[in-house]
Image 1 (cartoon, rainbow, N blue to C red):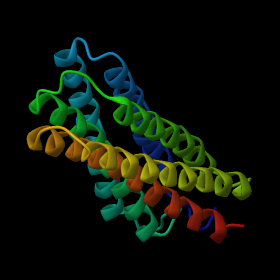
Image 2: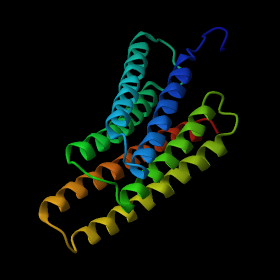
Image 3: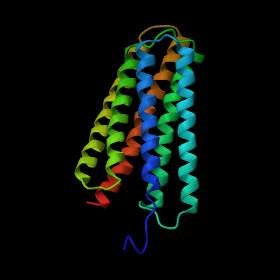
Image 4: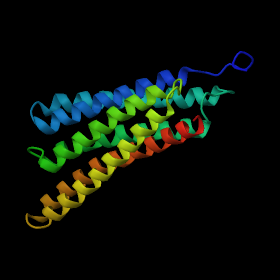
Length: 206
């Protein structure tokens, strides 16, 4: 059947390029939060990564418009692409907000949330490599479960961080930090969105 109706495999290459870009961005986010120096050059690098992600997203959608047969359901391709693009957007958006808000250094919740995003990105990286052949759907599903666990941890970090934030400090500082915390947590929400698509793919092929 594959010989009679060949399926376009380019999507897997593009998904892997996208998630590799995402992982690099998450690594850079951790670097920024842990060492808030040379911020101008680091944010410039983050902008380049986000731009690369946009280009890959455009290529995926452009290819989808030309494809008759796809290796995954078109809706799955759209959902996964959009979620990965959103994660990159929130990562870049967080660093830009930190610069625009003149944050002098990242605090503990920012560092913890950044590390959770990095862990999620690593799990997504391995799960996406697994959908090329789907030889081990159980492994993909386990990585998705781990991303869900990490997202729950991010929810807890956000809740505690905001509670502590409102215990003291001026209103402007509270608003600034709250915005950054929420953007970081939203990145983990989008990681979970991507994991849900991957889980659906794994279940459908198990």
